[in-house]
Length: 144
Image 1 (tube, rainbow, N blue to C red):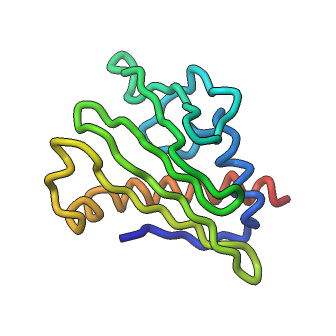
Image 2 (cartoon, rainbow, N blue to C red):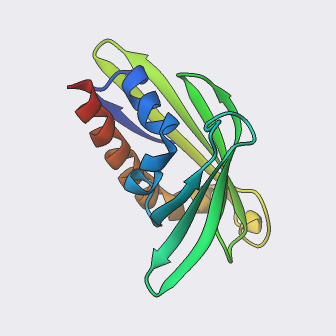
């Protein structure tokens, strides 16, 4: 089940934010800082090396791009220790004035993957809604 948000920003403006790995901690809820971004981000296999949590309980983590259709879709594998990994798909749908951003997240490893998809969606929906709100605001700022 997707979480979605309408924005006045164009798909290109949203993609600019997604393609700038250094903005990741600005819009991803829970990411606290960026340590490094692979030069080829968001090409398949590239990574964002980030930290999660609040100091002093900060963990080093990473998110890997596992697929993309430039300007329209980005697929990520995010580690969420100690809960395992999640597969996240971000899709951009053009609208007459702006676009719709869609986020789909599924646990892809144990132990969270045994939780039914409908329950997973209920658990991540508030966080993903906030992430999309932040992403849209950053993109709208670029929209000028």
